[in-house]
Figure 1: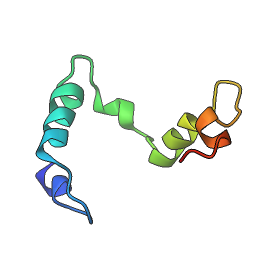
Figure 2: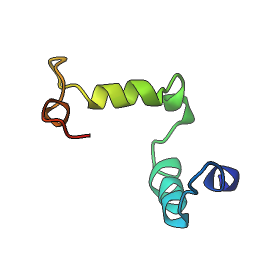
Figure 3: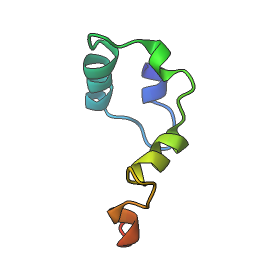
Figure 4: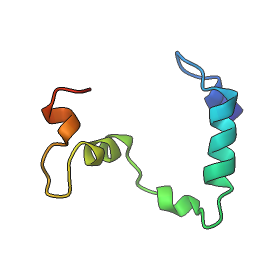
Length: 64
């Protein structure tokens, strides 16, 4: 976690790392197997479309 926190062009804040640990990794019911096959790109694409497969309001109004 600390290596990830300090990597990249912009470092992740202490607060965000603490939140990730407390609210996600330590959450009751969290299972790392739920992340198998996880894709950031696919997840972002899902957020960009509504349940009918249409682009979200944010994209159709030019908001990015």
